[in-house]
Image 1 (cartoon, one colour):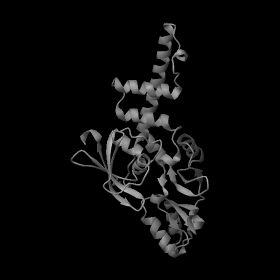
Image 2 (tube, one colour):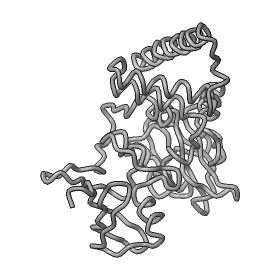
Image 3 (spheres, rainbow, N blue to C red):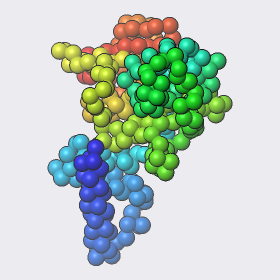
Image 4 (cartoon, rainbow, N blue to C red):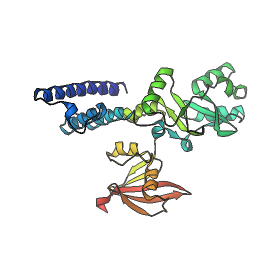
Length: 296
């Protein structure tokens, strides 16, 4: 991760120098950047320069993607990268202490939201390290643990917060975890510092990560995708350019484009791809097959 940030920093410096050089070169011929129509913003100028360097072989795809992700931070919102509430792991704090402790210790996650009464009533966030300290103090007697006494106060952030603002807030508060809520205060999901960093440098795997069974390349060239896979992750992994301005997940894109919830075996063609609905559960598309529309 550190190497990725260093590379990104060096690239930004080089690109800025390229922009300055371009401006001075134009000035030598009596031209000014401000006279070029349409005028480009600083972000657009950086993005155009990155694209030029990539086409000329000066920037590899991985570095181009990192630069693009850095430039996108102020345009994306936490709702674009958060773990949706349907995929959140949380614990009912009113359960017996033994059950709560066992569930947290069995989780692959470092932090676990606690709720009472309903899922939308998040009352705390318990860090596994704090739980282990508390267990050590009571001789590993699960029944003596009061999770609310060792849990941290939850931090709620609006789902419209930009990734740039959220990254700055994480760094300022020295925090790693926040609960995402909508305008009515209902829980939408959770976002972590790692989620934002992964948006820049790509997926960061460690020895405790669970393999994601979300994308499978088939022998015929098609790709089988879980409906909940984010469009941006799919674009990055396969170098596709599916739009993500109207939907976050691949299932959401199909629903948006068809203006319906398709039935199983229905097929649609848009954005140069052929989408076949393989599985639907109630009102959710859970699996799709995608291949190039040219292939038929």
